Amino acid sequence: MGYATLGILTIVVQKLMDDFASIGTISPQLLVLFTVFLTLREGQMVGMEAGFVAGFFDDLLVTHFLGFTSFVAVIAAFVAGFFYKEGEVEIVARNLNYAWISAIALIVSGILVIPIVAAGELNYFYVFLKFTVGTTIYTSLLAMIVVFVIGRRRRYV
Amino acid sequence: MFKWLSEFFLFSRNYVVFAILLALSLFLISINDNPQVRGLQVVGLITTSYLESGVNAVVGYFELSSANKRLEEQNGRLIDLLARSRRSLNENRQLRSLLKLKQQGENRLTAADVIGRTLEGGRYLITLDAGSRLGVKVGDPVISGSGLVGNVMATSDNFSVVRTLLDNDSRISARLENASADGIVTAGEYGLLAMKNVPRRFEVKPGDVIETSTLSTVVPPGIIIGLVREATDVSGTIFKRIFVQPAVNYSSLSEVFVMDYRPPSEVSMLLSKAMKAR
Image 1 (cartoon, rainbow over the protein chains, first blue to last red):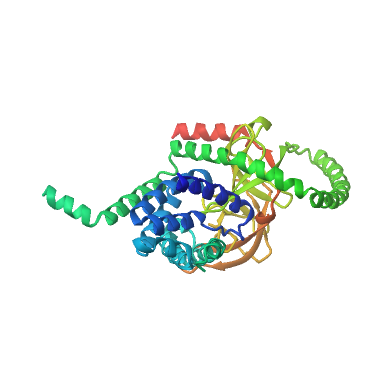
Image 2 (tube, rainbow over the protein chains, first blue to last red):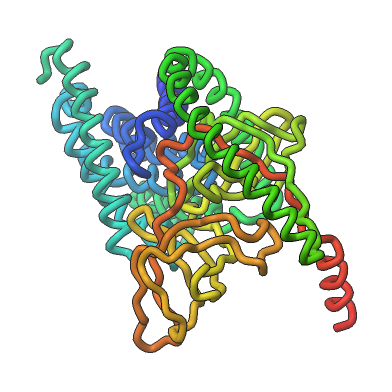
């Protein structure tokens, strides 16, 4: 129930960030942050399934491009799943590891999604720079802020 | 066999689910142009429009003072422009009557505020606070003071969604004003537009104006799209590669006009007649 609320909140904030916090045409991928967080706490399988479902609703309400965020979120959860440690859930999910695991998940999903974004029209290098690198940097910075805000309160950082 | 399969699934469960979910996502991506899926997208667009409209109202309240000042400045400039336009209009009327030219019909404009943006996955859509109640229809061209913004993609009673020229799916028939060459303007790279299908024989220079073409059936001709930033010949093809600086600054776009444009019905009737004759 808590995760569902967090997921809905993520989608709403994502929509608002598209409107008010995008830099040029670069917007942070908050849903990937949510998926990575969930994967680090609950494991690869739950992360992938939840990422797909949350991605579907994000596509329906935010990107209006069905399948796109689901694709990115499933890959991000799959990648983040390799960093899941059953006994160290809190430590991994709440310290700086979360930021760099999110960055790795974003860069891998961002590279795999290049052909879809380029749509046979745009230069792949341009899409890599703008979409993959730009989005990864912006989203990872947000992840670091989240880590500092939550982690400091619990003295993990 | 079944035992082997179940063992294989248990061992590689995560990989199998990963493959299935990826395949499902790709399937969803592939059916985005399906009319039923389009309908679903429109429902999503309209749902989020209400959220955007509420947030925009709150943000707009705090920006009223600066918006007021900006509008006063704009008003001063517009009064000056209006005086000059009136003179030109009178002169134009006189010349047209002398030449016995048919007067061009005026298209009704509906003012609207931009209340939201969608910028992911090669999409560049904007949401407006004007919908079918104000006469906005799917396909209507949307303009700003600087030039063409895009076309209406979906409408509800109170909102509409516009596909801008920077959207990967946007295609607008355009003309180079100086060279009188027609082509297609699509989304380009690095925030620019790209003009395609312009033959190499035309001389195109940086700064040349690109406007909507008379060949277009979705937008009226003569609306500025942008200026040529760079034009090069592409080796191995007969066309030029033209980068276009959009006339509209999309990141600061806040007010637009929706144009009630209907292409001449005689032309579409003639076209359908010709298609039937084939």
